[in-house]
Every structure is written in C-alpha cells, then in structure tokens.
Length: 476
Ligand SMILES: Cc1cc2nc3c(=O)[nH]c(=O)nc-3n(C[C@H](O)[C@H](O)[C@H](O)COP(=O)(O)OP(=O)(O)OC[C@H]3O[C@@H](n4cnc5c(N)ncnc54)[C@H](O)[C@@H]3O)c2cc1C
Image (cartoon, rainbow, N blue to C red; front, side, top):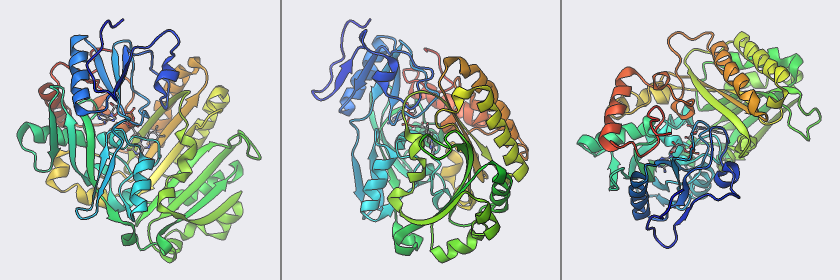
C-alpha cells in the first residue's frame, strides 16, 4: 500500500484503490481481461503533473500505464501499475490555415470526427468512435479512410510528449538525432516510449471527396446462412478493392431485439468516398439483382461524414471479457476462405455458447492500398514503424465471452481462425501492432531491424522501463 502521494496541480486527482473498488468499475475499460487493481489511478491535468507522476513511479518501483480511450485489450494492469488516465487532455484545436488539427492525448475518435466535420474537414480516423486517437496512432492507425489517405501515421505532423526523464519535447519531421529516433518510433511502435500530451495531424476539406451533398454513399446488405455463399462470392469479386472504397464483410450473430436473436448473419457494408454515380458503377456487384434477391435486407443511404463510424456502434460497449486481434492480408481473400472462417467462428459459438452472447465478430476490411504504398516510398515512411504497406485487407477477430473458463478455448481458436483466414497468404504472419496479443510477440508485427531499433530507442528514452511497453514487460 502506498503511504504518500505525488505533488500534483489542484485539478489533478490521485486515488489509491480501496476495498470497495473492483478493477472493472475503477478502470472502465473496453475489455476486462488481464486486469487487476492497480497501485493507484491518477488523472493528471498538466504536463508538470505527468512529470511528477513519473518521478513518483520511479520512487515506488511502479510501471506507468497511460490510458487514452482504454480500448487496447492486451494491456496488463497489475498491483505494480500506476494508471495514468489522460482524460483531462481533451483539447482539439483546428488550424485551418495550416490545415492541421492538434488533438489532446486523451481524446477519442468520435470527438475528433465531430470537431472536424463541423468545420468541413476530415482526416484519417479509426473505425470506432470510442477508440483513443493517440492510442490508435501509436500502433499505426488504420482508418475508415485507408483507401483515400492511407494510415494515420502518414498524416502525423508533430507530437508533444513528456519523456521518462520528465522533460517536455515537441517532436516532428524536423527533429534530429535521438529526438528524431523517438519521433519515428512513435509512428507505429509508440506504445510505452513517452506520454503524448498532444498530436498534430493533417486535415482535408470534405469537399475534395466530391461526394453528393458532402455525404458518403453507403450500402448495407444482410445475409442469412443459406446465402452466405453468395455473400462471400460478392466480397471476393470486389477484390482487390480499387478506388475510394471501404468494404467490410462482417460475420456475427443477430443481436437481442432483432427478429432472430443469436442467428448467424453476414453483413456486407460498403462506403464510397466520392460521387454516388461513381459508387454505383464501382460497387455494381452489390446492386446485382441476384445478390439483392438473396439478401434478407439491402439498403443504400447517404450518410454525413460524422456518421462514418455509425456501423461500429455496437463495438463501443465497454466491459466484459474480450479478445481482439487483427492480421494484415496482402492477397485477395477467396470465397472459400470466407466460408471456412465462418464455419470455424460458428463452431466456436456452438462449443462455447457464452462467446455468442456479446458482439463477437470476424471482420474483413478490404481497402485500396495504393495510397498506403505510395506514401511508403518516402524517407519518413521508411524510418517509421509500419511495414505492412502492401496490405489490402485487415481481418479482425473480436471475441466476447462471459465465462473466465472460456479464455483458454478462445486463445486456442484465434490462431486457428487466423491461419484459416491466411489461406492464400505467403510469408510470415503480420499482426497489426494495434492488436498485439499479451504477452506481445514483437516479431509478429515488426522486422528484426525495427525490433532492434525499438529496443535502442526504449533504452535511450526510458532506460528504467518506467512506461509499460508491449514486449518489454519486465515489471508486471
Ligand atoms: C472496437 C475497437 C475498434 C478498433 N478500431 C481500430 C481502427 O479502426 N484502427 C486502428 O488502428 N486501431 C483500432 N483499434 C485498436 C486500437 O487502436 C488500439 O487498441 C489502441 O491502442 C487503442 O487506444 P486507446 O487509447 O483507446 O486505448 P488505451 O488502452 O487507453 O491505450 C492503448 C495503448 O496506447 C497507449 N496510449 C494511449 N494514449 C496515450 C498517450 N496519450 N500517450 C502515450 N501512450 C498512450 C497506452 O499506454 C497503451 O499502451 C480498435 C480497437 C477496438 C477495441
């Protein structure tokens, strides 16, 4: 039990958990796996508070875990954790002249979308509104707009950080020497290297997308099991995705309150970031009468840009036990692969019914990788930490379960399901760093050269390992 408190500013808080606290109620995380009560929870209000907390953690041999949107499902919280909640760093400042937005270290995606769209702008945003913007950036930042703008790291201009030495720095494209090394590592391998108090990224006028009424053409087609084959073939036919398209195929079960709760469903969701007439040509396969005839429901809508993530609303739910993994795929996914992934997912549900009660799903997100690849030729990209630039699809496995005892089965299912999804892949598995497992295997996300550089940067900037970092988990 900690006997003293750090000296913080008047608005900051510091709380040592009491007997009335549970990890779930105290931390309010997206997933309650791997968590126990931390040594203390701090909500800093200033950069000086963060520096004071770092000193305190070192004096008390604690490991700092910074929390933004609290969505990383593989974060371990232990009695040796000083949990630093960044929710007071919630400012958003748009600079229209510079065409940038500066976002506080605790801001979530939905707030960024609201602020930008109100002013007529957009940027690369993660696909779920409750995900921390900075947290997503640190692991690369796949965006709903991948086909148009690539990943979030390519839009980043600068970051303000508090280092493990308690020093405040502004890092960016002009940084040099060791500061440049830290900036590059933040872009894709940034978890646990420094506390980011704000991040500046480029923004773009919505009007440049030439969408009808500045709204996104979006189509949702829902299939029941007899039509899974035609849904899988339609998704396969639309690959490789070319143009300003976000195409998602989601295997899940009907939620409570629907006509057939618990029944398996396949959803094909497409968004087109351009004129509706172009959308109807590019995504004609979705309008094919045979496909429409096989579907339970098919709707087209024009949605405002701040509603771009409305389809992932169910995934926002906090609490419960969840595993979340994502793998990058570079080869087109075949219909056979999709049907095999479906079969394996449904088998898990039959064997472990508690995995069917929440929002368990497998999502194939296919996008046009041309922008990601084109940005990859720059020096900045070469020095950054995202190496999956030829990825055309991300396959997400989100498994929610109710019984602690099912964790083992879910952990056995995931590698199996990922191997099935990778049927057409050659080369080693490439796990998206924002979805590393616990304990993390860095080799699944980075090349040997990048791991060596990450170790060098970690030793340079956090030699006492005060920040929890995936793959450097010495204290917990
Ligand atoms: C439902 C869901 C949808 C997702 N969608 C996407 C997506 O579309 N694109 C994508 O790229 N990823 C996505 N992710 C993954 C997500 O980006 C990562 O899990 C990310 O780490 C979450 O950040 P967070 O701030 O919400 O989580 P937290 O658990 O609060 O933080 C995650 C990690 O980031 C660090 N961190 C957070 N904020 C700061 C800060 N200010 N300074 C220093 N370190 C910080 C934490 O220490 C921790 O290591 C999704 C995850 C979920 C669960």
